[in-house]
Length: 374
Image (cartoon, rainbow, N blue to C red):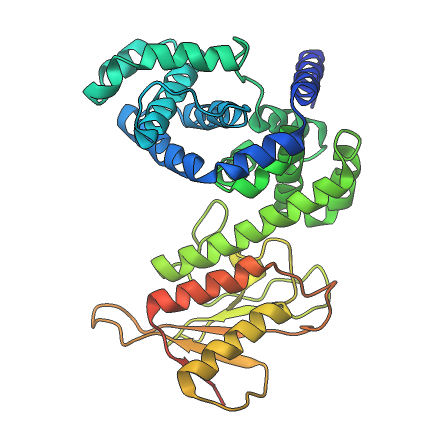
C-alpha cells in the first residue's frame, strides 16, 4: 500500500518526466534513437560487458543505457572525443556506465579498481563524462521505468512481485521499439502484464487504476508488446534448454492434472514424448495471458515451412508436429507438438508476428524436419 512518502516520490517522478518531455517530446526522442540504432546496439554490448566485469548491482547497467539513450537523442548525438567512430561509441558507453555507477554505488571506486578498462580509454573517460553531463544539463537521469514500476505496483490492491515487473522492464530496454513510450507508460504496461500472469481476473481493475496516470491506448499497446516478448522468450528458452520455463520457476514435465481454464477455450499445447504427457501453455507459463491459440500468421508460417520441407502441395487439418533430429543416447526423445483452435477469431486467437518469427528461427536452429501426424 502507498505511504505519504510514496505519494510524494511518485509526484516528483511525474514532474520530472513532464519536464523532460517539454525539453524533448517523446516522439523526437524515439526518432533520433531509432535513427542511430547501430550505435545503440554497439553501446548495449559494451555496457553489458562492463556489468559482467564489475559485478555491480543489475540496476547500474539499466541506468547506464538510459543515460546513453539521452545522449543519443541529443541533436548532435554522441560527443566526439576519439576520432574513430566505433571507439567513440565504446568510450561513451563506458563513461555512461561510470556515471551510473557513481550515482548508485558508494563503493564505485573499489568497483572501478577491479575493472580492467582498456588503456586507450582511460585518459578520455573524464572528458567524455563532462561532455555527457553538459548534454544532460548536469542532471543525471535518475527517474526510470523501474522507479515508476515500484510506485504503480503499490497502487494496486494485489501482491505484484517487483522482481517480475523489473525483469520485464529491463528486457524491454534492449528493444528499440519501446523508446516510443514514456517511462511511466512502459512501467504501467509491465505492471499490467504481471497482473495478467498472476491475477488474470483482476486485469480490468488494475487497468482502470493505471489509466488514471498514462494514456490507456499506449498502455494496452505496450502491454501487448511485452506479452508477445514474454511468449517469444519462453518458447526460445524451451527450444534451447529443452525445459519448461515459467516466469519464476521451472516445472517438471511429468504427468499432471489439467488446470481449470478461466475461459471456455482451447489453448495451444505442448506434448512431450515418450511419456505423452500434455501440458497446456497456460499451465506452462509460456502463455501467461490465457491466449486460446495461434494466430493465422503463425499457422501460415508453419504451413509454408512444412511445404518447403516435405514438398506438399496442400495441407489440411489443424494438428502439426515438429520432430527433432535423433538425440544422443543419454538424452530422451522429445518432440514439439502444436494444437490450436479459434484461429480465425482475432479477439480470442491473438499473438504477434514475433511468435511466428521465433518459431521459424527456432526450427531452423534445430534443423528440425516437419512431419504431419495422422
